[in-house]
Length: 265
Ligand SMILES: Nc1ncnc2c1ncn2[C@@H]1O[C@H](COP(=O)(O)OP(=O)(O)OP(=O)(O)O)[C@@H](O)[C@H]1O
Ligand SMILES: [Mg+2]
Image 1 (tube, rainbow, N blue to C red):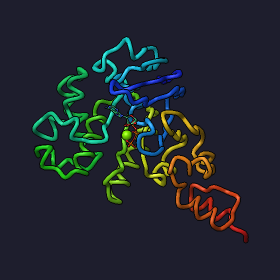
Image 2: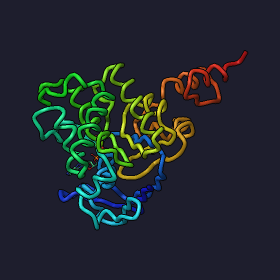
Image 3: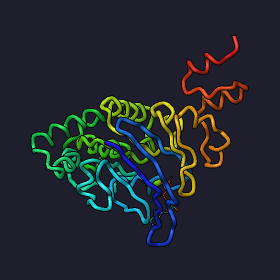
Image 4: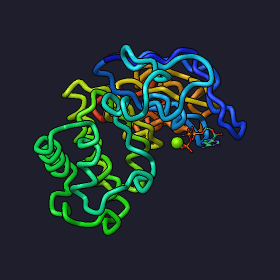
């Protein structure tokens, strides 16, 4: 499975030019964090990958499928998408049915749909809430439920739009564990986040966007070291990188061990 975004431009019907020539190649097994200030075009770009939006110019392909030639329903078998606002995707009356909705729609057998949903609820720590009405969950639990619904679909590509927002330390750890599990399964994991420490802890590649374009794209450590460019996107480097800079060290460490190794003896 690979994703190709080829010189994509997109203008909303209202007139906002949200993407101005974005090109990216994403290989099977890659995990990428998308960062950048509000309105940079991150969500618009991700919506092109599941066909929710079609490019005004350029081309998006998901393996051998041009997204223009396939419906959102069909693309959903390859690309799972967790929206920024969980309430945008709630359709059922119980948590278990909500999580099983996607797998059933994809044509999984009832047994598989339920088994995958039960397993996904366990991963996100919501097993005890399977009979609860989705709107009786807290906002952060609802977010975890929508994560579970995408996990249960078992798609080769998984996209999370700001999953860390509003999560406490426990929620953050859980989402980090989910990302690591998806990486082990060699699925493509794409995340939009403003949490730069989360991004440097779990992602090998970072794409920084600004004003509808890709500003920097590269290995996480290299991108985090570009404080000058990051500053233009209003993204602060991770705490460890800022600490190293404040200490005058010529490194951009992503781990505590990396920082310690760079300290003069
Ligand atoms: N439904 C829409 N209709 C018209 N314009 C839109 C729509 N959604 C987004 N835009 C505009 O497109 C541009 C890119 O928005 P987008 O939501 O993709 O940015 P983003 O990087 O995801 O920002 P954020 O961090 O705030 O979520 C912005 O100028 C925004 O105002
Ligand atoms: Mg967004």
